[in-house]
Length: 305
Image 1 (tube, rainbow, N blue to C red):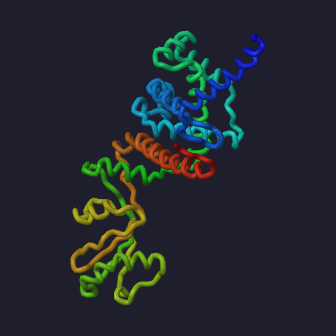
Image 2 (image 1 turned 60 degrees about the horizontal axis):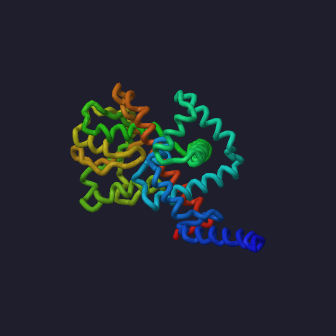
Image 3 (image 1 turned 90 degrees about the vertical axis):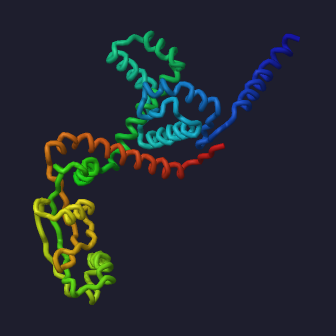
């Protein structure tokens, strides 16, 4: 009797375990990794604590949705796979070293850490894996995303102007190519076509017969001082490397090509320059990261249920 019970016990336990797993709904699969409903619920239940420990990854905190939680787990898997491919595998010793370093920096002992985790509904094992995930995410950003980011000086200046476009102390200086035609050479229809003809001219090098008498003048280091209000606003609305809309000055119609557009660097610009660069850098990083996950997902078997 006792022997039969011993033989049946492993089978009973195995069946119970399988039944328990079947009760835990599968919500997604990434390659060979199964993402269960209980895992997603657990992540959402302590998302606030995760946001305190790793705010960049879990910035949504308790506001994280079911779908967002699944996406984060999928992204974690894609990042880990990419880092493994690049030769970066974060060991348990590296994670433990990072935890000890954080404890020393904050002047906390292990017990204080455990008390914090317990008070925020997180186990030490979950914290340990969150630190591993954070290290991986930092390497991923430094090695994969950051090299793809570019923020130009002109983009910083344009962004600063948009923030301060009603500030009369903000001004630009330009290098312009002025394309002009006497009004006697134009009618209303041809005036509307003038700008488009110049755009084509930039590519083909030829102008339609109706614009053959156009005069071209390069104007360097033009400041806003002395410009009419209408022309000043027209130039401010036009990006570097673009044509303005046509404008009539006297008896001549002009279209300006903005070859160069520089913000006159004022004290207020210099004070805000680093902040704007960081803001633009983050915006571009988010865009590139989203595109990276989109492309990388196509290389893996991913299914959401």
